[in-house]
Length: 448
Image 1 (cartoon, helix red, strand yellow):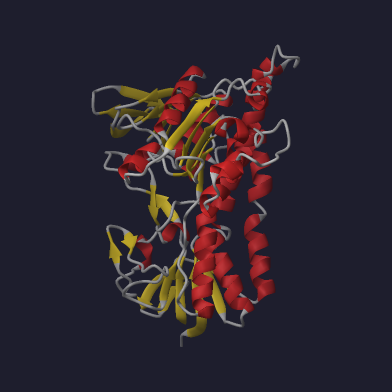
Image 2 (image 1 turned 30 degrees about the vertical axis):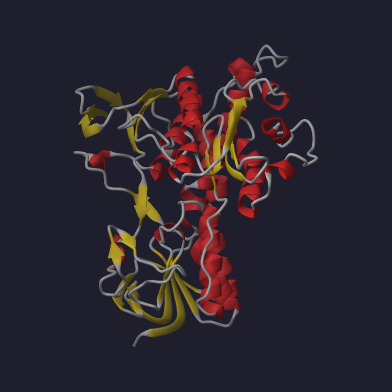
């Protein structure tokens, strides 16, 4: 006999948890399922552990930068990788049990196992058939399958964040978030790092003027950034690896890392059996995040693939899905003002339109840009790589886009995000009375 529920949530990350909890609070019978440890990508193998490593790497880097500025011995600061991993585990290890307790307290049944559809309103997991009025697909994302011989030899970001020992030589395939973030942490911990990117536009969704500055800075600190360098094969070489590229060059590594993008994690779900439409590896959803072919099925977060693969997007999707389930299907997500940050050292942050995108839309705008290395809030950190680029509607109109490179960029971008989302005129943003000196106080100078 099948077990009957109001909602089956597939995944235990930010999106699935939020929808499950709200539906359960409304009196629904809810079951949540995950093929991996409870907690999802962000808490266990993504944003949060990465930022923990970044924090220590940034502190070591700042100590080096401030040597001879009154800090004695900063140039001798080193990172003990095993201790850093132990610190990271102090955050990640408690997560699965904490989630299990929260589910039990809320009255949500939790099952660990791989779910697959066995009908439009049913999934099978751990030998049980679960039937429900609604099914939520919030199964996250996984590394894309690259057309590279030997791709199965590549380590993933999951593997990187679980390394007990840091390899001496790392080669990162792809010039996106994962490669730049892992490279900057590893380089500060003493590894030899090379990023291989297929064309001349790494971090393609970011403002390229600032990306070029980040690439130059990465090279200055010893990270090899090879552009126009498309990987063709990965081979074993003794205890290490060799990455062969199309132009004939070969790069030796103790670890070769997959940084070639992520795709919705849908393959194991047998969506055909659930009458859930897919096109080119992505769910076909309407504006309410509901399957166009099966109205019982909704999706949220990375699995939905509607907005950027970011935790705030998963939270927004979850709110929309929960409201549609509980109030009627009338709500749709608005991704205006979603920020993106590359946690390199220093970070690169972005919100709104790039100049290229604004020109592509035929918009009229003003550009304000400049170097921030001399700003008090930056100079006192010893960081030489700092710049901004803003896109504004003419005559003090709304902020169309903001792009920052430098210390505190990941915090200051949130003020610009508020302006973009609420269409706050730039002249009003410039009137903000911020604490001084701080990253926020730089905004009036950028807009001046």
